[in-house]
Image (cartoon, rainbow, N blue to C red; front, side, top):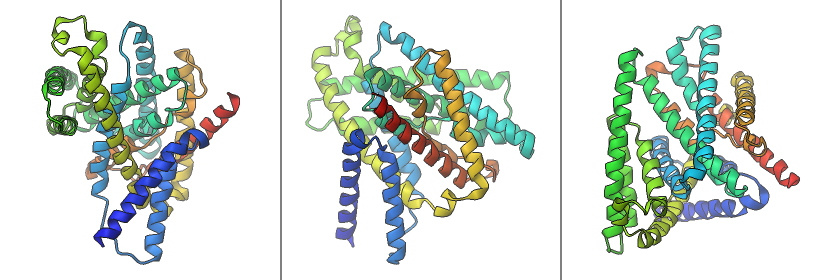
Length: 388
């Protein structure tokens, strides 16, 4: 049995690698193929009557690790300098405003037509408003440099804004001036922790000469994020700051503090660190979406009670995105298509307390929105290819 499990995992991950290699040619996002692969595995195991233990508890663990690594991977690739400030501003606007518009739009609809308390409706709606960097960043890999850079900024910021917004609403029973004061203190505390932790980790990366140092670095990043979550602090801010600092050490070399890191030699270490982070992120992301596909029930995908709501939400996402892209004066194509829901949506949906869950937003709706947004992205990228 042990050998069989190893063989199956090896074959699945090699297939995931093939999907990743061929994505630039077929324009089919690898996530769709991974979901189909997991679903097919479930179908065959059921028909062969193979007993498989409950894998649901593994999904949040893989998802959390994947989220951290993907945001880290994206931030390591981003350049920070004065010329990038307009792009950062635009990506922040397109990341934040649709999140608020879609979340409050769904919440007010549920409040008005379904008589669900606004706060409870909002907690359930926020996960749908967040773009998944786990799907968006890999899918944008073969776009033009400016478009790819925008998607990386936007989706990473959408994850961060979404998690902060979700925690703010779900952890506070009463929202008032005191709540906003506590939130501001938590944010400042996380920024301070991020600055100190970033300097310490960068120093570790620069000073340690042992042949094993990149994996311990990633483990420490996971640890700091997890500890911050225990205290309900926005840990993704640390991931973003650390990745941006390490990835842009050359841009900061004129500061005396940075000169102590020997930026030229340090950049070589960062290149190696980026490579291993990318490979581990690929591994975890592949396992997550294969597992999610395996756990998908066909009845959830074909649920007629939620499909119209899911289609309406997907259309709403595209309309809001188109308007915002026009406002910030960015080309609609292909950016309008790359607004998938995925890993972060699943993670936040699974973390909603039982007392706050509602029947109108269930596993079926979440699954349908994820699949629909991925299909829109797939056909959008295919059509964009024809116009080049």
